Image 1 (tube, helix red, strand yellow):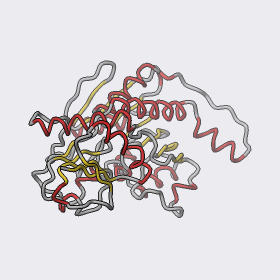
Image 2 (cartoon, helix red, strand yellow):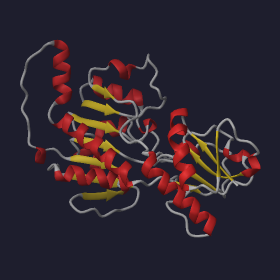
Image 3 (cartoon, helix red, strand yellow):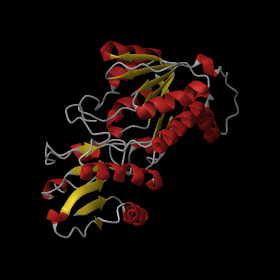
Image 4 (cartoon, one colour):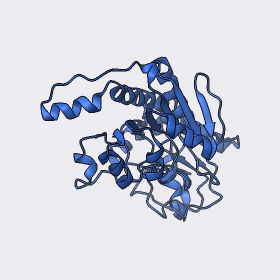
Length: 309
């Protein structure tokens, strides 16, 4: 019996001793050294190559190294019966809440404006509204969205949120459905995207969405790059309908050097760092699921393939 681990080379170095300690009875293999594919019963992966999982005939469970699973489910060869588990780690929720709070406050305190003024060596003070006067909209109210909402609520921002199904969260107005999405777009001063990437959410932030947003509002996207229609965002910024955007995720990563996002004066970029997988906590969560699979117990945080998360 063996486990296949697939991520970057530096990740393999950090995970190797953890997996050896937590699952000493199992052999852990790291690409490209798969050995006999029939030996592999569990896979722990981030962006596995297409066809890899389908080539493992005795695979029992796939564990994502990230909260999202689009990097697994985009491969049409992944067997439909194969269980896939999301990584639900309280540590990840805390760090993404931290990122969201930092970027929302940066926008709220006119950071985008002052950053542009600095490049022009221009000195001008701008009116500063209170946090209570800025409505923050959250798209996606799962564990990450809830953590971000709690942090923003403590900072004094009024909150409104949208999800595929109706949720109830203390201290914020929660909406669902197409009408609910329209309301969140129209009322938000700062819109934060934390949605899972599914067929229904690709390009959810397109020209139609941007036109419904308030003039002067801003966007923070730390979910997936494909949620945003790049050209539509650039057009909304160029005509001054949106005041700015903070982007952590992109359709192609690393972001190509010729992409106009790099040089746009109203865009702040970070290199997919809003949330990160902490091996020390994630390894314990993932190995618990493997132990459950071995014991025939219910698995944690399984993906509903019908909805994509």
